[in-house]
Image (cartoon, rainbow, N blue to C red):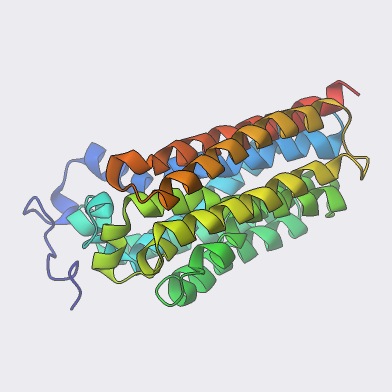
Length: 313
């Protein structure tokens, strides 16, 4: 019996079905991890503008976003179902609905599977079959590839597991064109190389949580110096890849300008983290969350430039 299953009536002492309706709705929404999905949509919608070389069909944007939310929400709910034992051991996840008991494991599983089925059908009938296939592939990679296989076995879990988070780029492009282009591949690779240096600073901050749960995130099994060196390496590749859209002819002058400025600031923060790690500082003085927060701003600015660039050419 897992740590979660040993608490069938939840932290508040009442069965899930007897909780207030509003609290239950809020808990099911929490299962979809809305804040993570915001990042996924940030990469989906701008790519649709680039693919359309202007304003895409707004109805198509809406149904693609709804389908993306349902798909990613289903994957996140299944992730919480599978990880409910380790979530109960980590401070930052101990209040998740399947840990507190406000949602039962069975409900979480059924909810996640239902969202995946609905989202796949949604894409097939309202977008296109290619987008549906890409959406389903993202779910399978996140749930099976990352959560079930990689997360508890290798320190490179977030590197390869991050592929699932790259898929919205393909989905956004295919929703407009019913195909995948080199532009989409470049932006896919940007997110691929962005994911580790985005997530490792957070993992450095909460590495004691991961260690307690037995999850071999890189900061758990390697020193801060090694992690920071890896962050710098991925950061340089990410910035270089982000500039490839320009010589390939998919963007004008605006996108590369933003990519250079934002990328330079990213590299400044990454090298700053590396310098602090080499000096041996720990705790709050390491300031690892500065890069984590900037990483969100960076990807937002970069993909906003993707959306704006077609109007300035």
